[in-house]
Each structure stands twice: as C-alpha cells, then as structure tokens.
Image 1 (cartoon, rainbow, N blue to C red):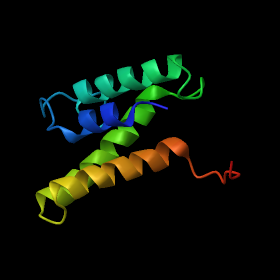
Image 2: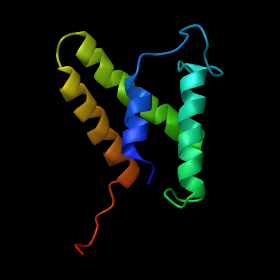
Image 3: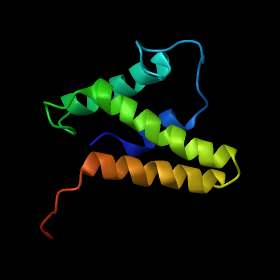
Amino acid sequence: RPDTGELLAMVSRPSFDPNSFLGDEAIPAREALLLAEILQRARMEGGLAPDVEVLPLARALFHIANGARISWANGLLSEAACREAIEASADLLLRGLERREEE
C-alpha cells in the first residue's frame, strides 16, 4: 500500500493553482499528477494491485480530502479531526470493503 503519511501530507495541504485543472475534472492538475506519481511508485513497489489505474485513484483521494477540508473550513472539524477523517477514508478506500479472514 502507499505510504499513508505521504498521501495524507499531499492531500491535506492547500490547493496549488485553482485555475489549473486536469481535463474536464474539477481537480487541480498538479495535485492529481503528484498523487498519481506517489500511487504509481506504490504500484511499482507492489503496494497496489498491478491493474489499479492511478489517476482515477488520485482523483478519489483528492475528493476524500476536499470533503474533509470543507468540514474543517466550516468549523465542523478541528485540524486533527480533519486529518483523521482523511486518513480513515483513504485507508478504507485503499484496503477495500472485502471481508478478510483474521490472521
């Protein structure tokens, strides 16, 4: 799996240039490409399945982070709670919903 700390640091920081978007998606291009680069490295190191498409995953992680940041910006979450929400949601996305046998 990708390094959660690295992903959390990436998606938690303020957006770069709000006028730079990737295609028709409402996601800043630079953030998407940096996240995709982190995810690509994780895939190459065996942390992600080889068939995972990193750009859609980067978009999903970006949207998870934005949702938490909106709550933080509206005073509904503290900074720590915002980071915890992003980490918990990213972890759920990355580990999946599949039932796992206890080791």
